[in-house]
Length: 198
Image 1 (cartoon, helix red, strand yellow):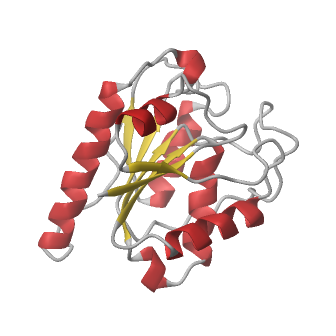
Image 2 (cartoon, rainbow, N blue to C red):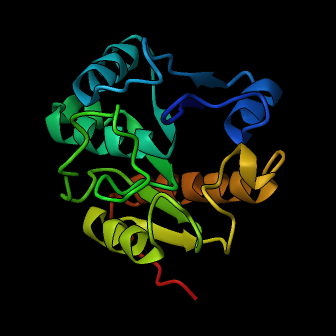
């Protein structure tokens, strides 16, 4: 299994759970962008397209923050053959481009594509994320046809959230993979819908 790690604005520092997962498992590889502090959506999407064309076999996307929106734009603008190589995508703490904390230097990410993803996805959200309300995250998951997991008051689910290795997140990721593999095995008969928050 190949995991493509997709950090958001500013990339993910050494204490971020994405970086920790990369360090502990060589199957996790980071997508490197040219400019992490002045994100341009079309450029980021182009880098993702090129990187995926160079990776053989199935890929699981592990996105955080702004990268969740990048994945949505990529899925909208990419041929079905390439999208079919994505086994699943875990989309953690998607940001609201209309929110007051959205970085002014990030361009081209709005409006967010709201068509359902053509592969299984899981949105993971916090109840006190300063970059998006919980209603925004749940509604976005609904539009994307994603399952939605609410993990409590954990901020932006980043290094400042002090999540460490985030074993709960790894459990969610591997649960998503098992469900995605089951969906492929039974020809897509599984009902892939949003799980309402408890």
